[in-house]
Length: 118
Image (tube, helix red, strand yellow):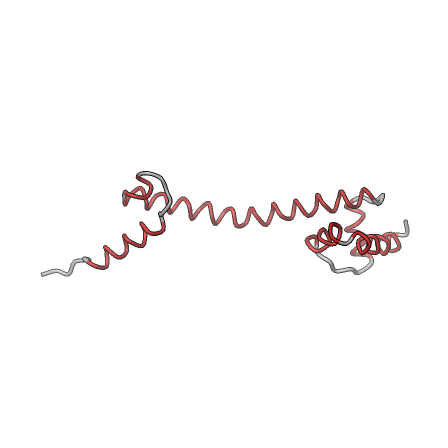
């Protein structure tokens, strides 16, 4: 007599159905559809984990650009000045400083302008 999957298959299917909780209709009730849906969801999750990094970087750059223009500087000049002044702040922390502590951001801009000799 050959061994059949039995309890192991039931457990595997239960794991799939558990992952598909909250989906609508056959997407949570039919095994084949659940498998397809979960595979697609995994692909979207993988893609969007990377897209989120891009989106946040775009947001920080937009914020920095706006903050720089208020201080008569372009974003590209800010980045070049930071490199020239050897200031190693990333875009995320710079944008947070620009929002939360404008005085500190003014100090950074001062150093950047001095490094660029503007």
